[in-house]
Length: 417
Image (cartoon, rainbow, N blue to C red; front, side, top):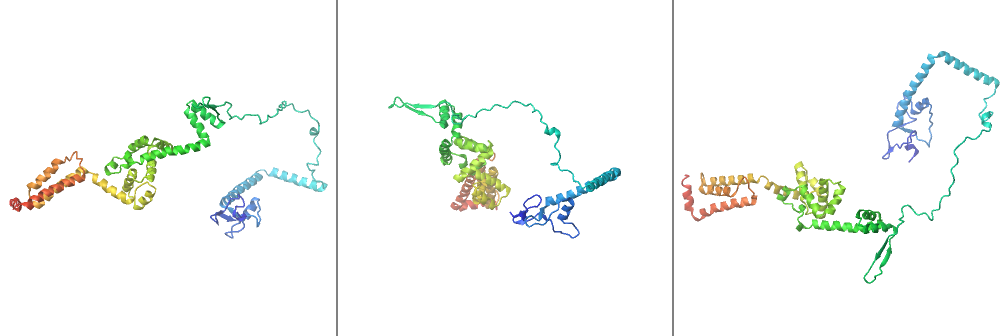
């Protein structure tokens, strides 16, 4: 950093992104009628000179501080003048004394004695009795560190004796200091303390990581198996209508308890973030676990999200692709208002028969009555496919007699004429 890139007064850096900004020049004037910063500082008692090795600029904070100092200094001078005007006698006597002392000093031609030339004070040269103080502390020799046992070292000895059938005397193993506490707590079945000691042992912790990751891997494989009935596999329109975070949390807790505990620890036990993060992570491994992604699709479609939003979020495994989202939305639309849809189809069948036969038609009325008898509009549970098949079957029954006996059709039309 160059010396010209910093403020001369507070030493702050003035260069931002390669450009010196937010500063003022000390010796240059923006307006000829105004004083430069160096002239203003000289009036305050701080003369500055131009120097190649020193900066010629100050920051705006120091510039504003100079203005406040000038205002305050003017107030201080007014205080001085007011004090002199209020006590003119004291001011005159002080000035006369100062002139008399200066004249005496000039007439005698002697200078004031310096401090080092003065005579010493008698009280300091005389020997004085020492001040009574506490007795000095006894000096003890510091013990050597060769035979000193550290505080963290175990003083007890832990041994393990293993008796084999082929070796009745057994093998005697003396545990080291870093594993003795682990062996002792395991033998006493104090699992929490044993686990704490295992975590403190770095070598043992590295070996445990592989086993922990294997436990997680086994649980994830179990969830990704489509035959196990995990909730995120159920992505049909009927299943999505019954989607809930409570069911997802229940499946995670029962099928992958260790993995769920990790996500729950990260989110501090909050159920919704735990389930959401686990669902996104699982979809990153198995894209067919997309029930939660379709749930997010519905939220985005309700908010009017564009195709680019789906494109970006699908890369993060938060949503599906846009075409899959639109297709699933159409499937969900067919399941909404199923009772009303059935009533609409029945009405269309009746109007169609009236239009074809002109007026009251016995066969059309019979087909409509058959449809209304087979479907209870209050507690209908049929799908749209069954409804459409029923309508098609009624149309086939109407067309068959017309092809076989045209006289019957003319006979049915004669009353209307």
